[in-house]
Image (cartoon, rainbow, N blue to C red; front, side, top):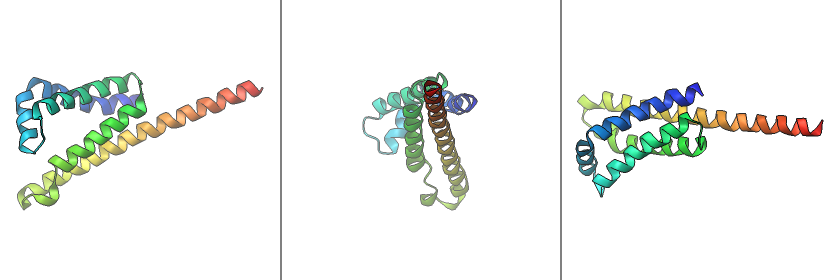
Length: 131
C-alpha cells in the first residue's frame, strides 16, 4: 500500500496543479500539436487525479497503473525529447525523461506486487479448501 500511495502523490500533485491553471496546460498541449487541447487538458487532469485516488484505495490497481504508465510514457515522448533539444536543455530533458522511466518502473513494481499478492491469496485459498 505504501508504494501505491507514494507513487500516487506525484500524480495527484501534478493533476491539481493543472486544475489550477488549465489554460496554461491547454496552451502547452496546443503548442505540442495536440488536437482539442482544452479537452485533452481535462482528460489529463481526470487521469492524473482519478487514477491516483483509485490507486490509493486499491481499486482496479492494474488498470490504474497501466493508465498512469502509458500517460507517463506519452509525456516523456512529447515533452522531454532530450534527443531533439539544444545542448543547454539536453541535460535537464534527459533527467526528466529518465525520471519518468523510473516512475514507470515504480508503477510496474506496484502492478507486479499486486499480481503476486493475488496469486498468493489464491494459493492459500486453494490450500485451505483442500485441507
